[in-house]
Length: 128
Image 1 (tube, rainbow, N blue to C red):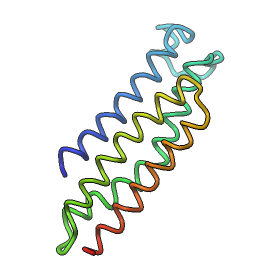
Image 2 (image 1 turned 120 degrees about the horizontal axis):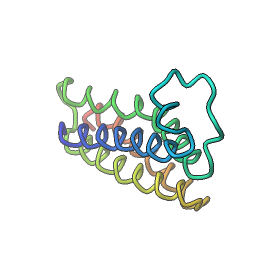
Image 3 (image 1 turned 180 degrees about the vertical axis):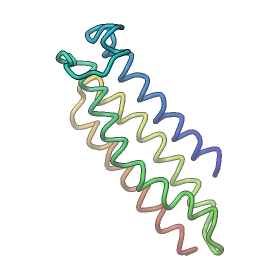
Image 4 (image 1 turned 45 degrees about the vertical axis):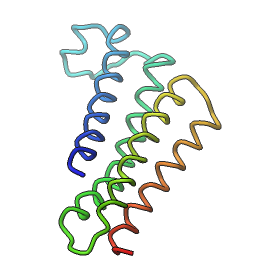
């Protein structure tokens, strides 16, 4: 389970760097190193990368809470919690890719699968 938590956090870190890397050419190195008081338009792909990152930030707590509790609470169905973490990770990878390439329905489906994985992760805490 710790591996899958670390993998999700690695994906989060990758999305942070993707967003920053795509924005750097528009922003410029000097502005990037400064206080960023006045930023240019992000552009199509840098804007999408930023929105994917914001969405990940909003969903990460709903993954981390049951994932960490699964390690701490006795009676947790750890195999179900691990499966939920695996599904969440794969769904977030597909969500990011579909969002970046502008695939609307597949993006929503991937988001729903990730949400379902989080619900399954909470359910695994009951040990049922």
